[in-house]
Length: 427
Image 1: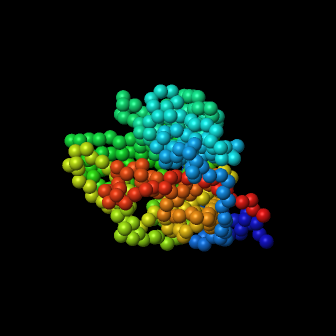
Image 2 (image 1 turned 60 degrees about the vertical axis):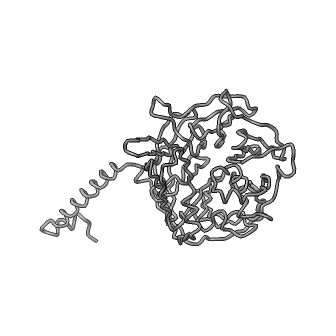
Image 3 (image 1 turned 135 degrees about the horizontal axis):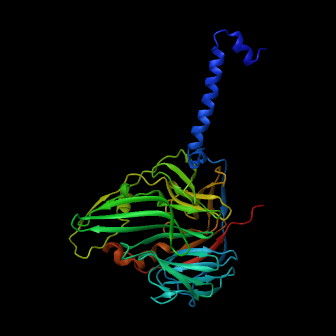
């Protein structure tokens, strides 16, 4: 068989030689062009997941401990946030009472952290909590503020995001710790009364543990009127409507509102993975559309503002994202949202492996779980909290914002109970 050099000579007109040169030049040029493409573009992995899981599994959750049930020594208001540490202690952020209860693995309340006030270790309107090494971060929603305390409740620093001199304070929607940094959804609103416009700039950002902003992962801006307020659900939706950060420091966000799609980024903003799965949208009932339109309640002191509601006909495809301690991603789809499941079914998740494989559809059951009243809170993928009577407890606390007919319908409200539940070990 002739070599390429043989063909070049035999061809007489040098056609193969010219073609070889052109091919060599094209390959070199392609390599040079590829080398100029940002690494983030080359590194992005696109995964089309199957519409059906490889397996479906139902697990009965086991009760570990329960507090608030006829326990006169423990007072519970409204649990707004919770975390579990490496030793099995559960920390409960009580929004109403503005403190954190530390509950041991045996169900004993061993400490109360923080309190309402303006001094060291104190804050107003406790919003959520996170763990940062040996410190507990207590988060105030607005103005966005973090108060650190140690495990004994001793003040250990803190920070406020933004300042009036810098153009106003930030609101903190969600703040979580990822190793030595924080990841947070924050926003800031600027108001122009002359233009009758309020512009909210929201970001999902990385910051250090003292609140200094770093990489902006996702940004979103929405404009609303002041005297004519548009509650436009489509315009208000952002990629970080639900998000999660893994133990090894990757951030998952909901890539699209109406499609099952997830973006996964590194903490420096590199888009590592895009996962999509074919799924059917869920159409809302008329009652659900009205509820979606009323989910944002705005109290206007003058009473002169008008409000235009623009709800959408379909639920978001993904309503919640959570990372387990082992890196698995737990997703709640619109078809498995709270309130839609059968009695005794506490939750149902699409579970994705750290490598991006659709592992299973996981159904969690708990005897006596009422999907209209109770809430399932994700802790680490093995342990969960069941908040009994959560819906009425929340309505009772926020009764002033409810329509009069709903306030009258509350009646006697059952006390809140907190139950730690756990998945049994696999055989």
